[in-house]
Amino acid sequence: MKILAMATITVIAAATTCAGEAGPARERRVTVCIDPSAGRLMEVHAAEALASEVFGRIRVSVDWRERHSCPARGNPIQVSLSYDTPERERPDALAYALLAGEGSHIVVFYDRVRKSAPNPLTFLLAYVLVHEVTHILEGITRHSKSGIMKACWDHADRFEIGRGRLGFAPEDVDLIYGGLDAPGFGPTLAAPHNPAPVALQ
Image (cartoon, rainbow, N blue to C red):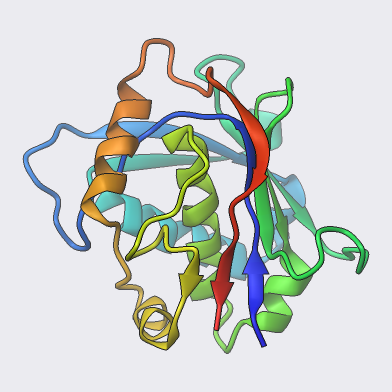
């Protein structure tokens, strides 16, 4: 049974790197503001730490904030968690990312991720967050042939996710850097509502 994590993007920009390679690039920074209810969940804190580690390998620093301390400037990415997702709400999706005039926004179907993930939940949740944040940073609806931004994570990918070692394809690193280096960083290019799913086989 395939479990889909869909990302619908309307306006975005960014770049990524090889798994485990930091390279000579300078460090870049992105702010992600998460639903305050997540503060009660140890798994979310652990997932944030692992997501930071994954981005850190390509010299991108993630500043995780709760919504109440989210800066007004700098186009922070907003993350909401859904705990009781209706079955008809994007069936089979684990999360989606969009920009609909209210800033970059990710919705994670936390209840579905929990049901889909083997123990511990941390690894799958972290990679769902990384995948969706990257969609927003890259600014285009696309998937790669390998790595974190594949449309479909196979068994080998899931094994690497479970070790916290699945990395970015080189082209994704370039797109992430490009987005973060854009003047006044943030999604600024209009894009259609095309689904960009990632599936677990």
